[in-house]
Length: 487
View 1 (cartoon, rainbow, N blue to C red):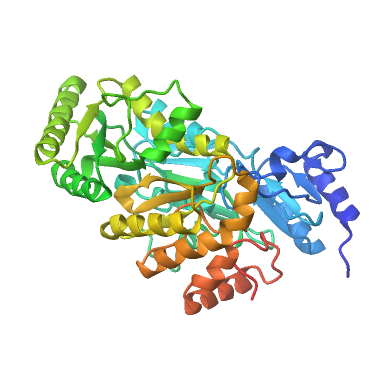
View 2 (cartoon, one colour):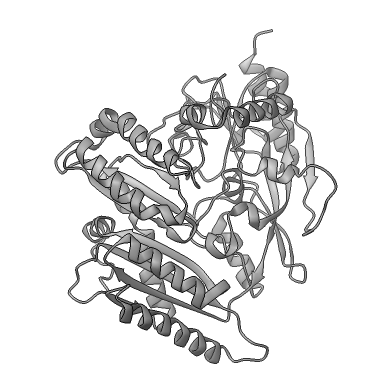
């Protein structure tokens, strides 16, 4: 039987209320139907905004009965087109923004249970108000949601110490494609009672079910944090500095970011009010941002912990200066200065957005292979696209680089993307694969990299993924056309 869209919309209006079932012909839905990079422009049958997990389950049961596909959406901050509908006008766009309640905070168990629509920053602030830390941190934290973070297994700037979103989640609540509600929100560190369904849903990008809530790990707030910028003449020097930082700081090493001069020049051009901390104002070939988070000893005053952390940090940098590993260093002397140093790193994606569409790569490599890879790839890209600019930055500490190509000056950015993206992707991803890396480190697959997954994923792994999809979503109603390529 063919779907009856009007009957479905009437049912959804009765379930959610007319104000929460919106059609594109009745109102402007562009805030939900255009992705962050403005590469994908969808048109849903309707945008629906359920208020709780039970309403999500009701929506899913109605859509399953009508055989209508559903696209789950969080904060719509994704970079791979995974959270917007296609242009067919036949998919339901299910936005989880109204599921925004913090259900529980258990300080003794170091857990917080939040609904999927909670903004990441809201969760960070709730943990901080209890004197605790939720360490997931990324540039979009003021608008991205916990459900989206987990659905894409987000990384961010503190992976080196705390891990990806997967490592920060102890339990999930999920609505299945059939509209059943699974509650697995226990805050247990140990639970060996069968298959780990939590890990199955994390990173599945809405293709197996809809995440409606999560129990998250919290941590003691560090007694002191120290941040520094260091100037490196090469990536080899940056990797050497990383090795020394690991040895000197151990588990206190929280962040180790790297940025090439072109990335910071772009930031300076579009955001001239941001600082230029090095003498002379010019950027070195590579700038490293290092952060350590120091635990305090029992009854130790915070000032003493901070002084101890700063002394150890300065000793690390002094040794690196003496050996010639770095050419200069700036240590933040206050929280405000630390934030200004981080602002340089966090404004790189914003500066790229100001400059226009670019060819983005979110790649992971063994840290030891990164210098040779970047050097060889820069030469290859300069030959393939003369005059283009390589914007390279990212999380060197965990081997994740954002390796992006900007159009030459005076060249229309959308035209450059259209003309060169396939060639550049093949060049970069072939080199990544040869070096034992991944073409998708933390942004996910979505619609943008769906074909790439089909070409590059191990065939056995791809077949297993398809069997899981068929078993859990036999009607292919959950986010079709994303993550898994047709086959």
